[in-house]
Image (cartoon, rainbow, N blue to C red; front, side, top):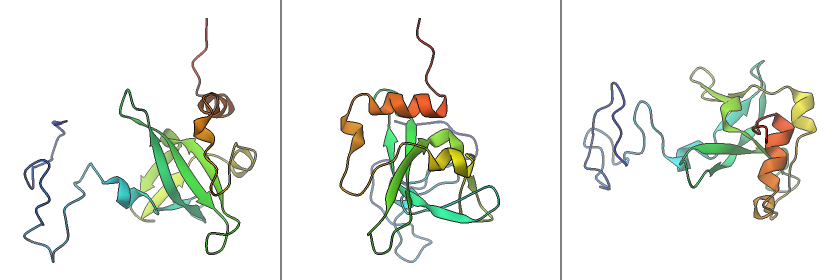
Length: 144
């Protein structure tokens, strides 16, 4: 879907896998305003004090609006053992160029009590899970 964002220029034909002619064989997957999903996954996440908390494991996109709803953050563990995954509202993250990662605007106590899951679990298969996340973080619109 073409966009008309300010200060953005087309570097290649849409849908093309053409390499950046000014680079060293690196495929184009980023502009000043847009970034490919594979570059977001694995990006470090910090608290407001700049302390490393974990990383972005993946993110959940609303199929209807096309907007990112949740970032699933990975915390703890060693070599994939003992990790826990915390879906947080995407709007709670801000990219910090100085840190080269996202800063989360949720305090540690709120995050510690948040819904989470372990490796191999997929809580999003439960239709009510997104609603529980919205309720926990205060993002659900009131119902009439």
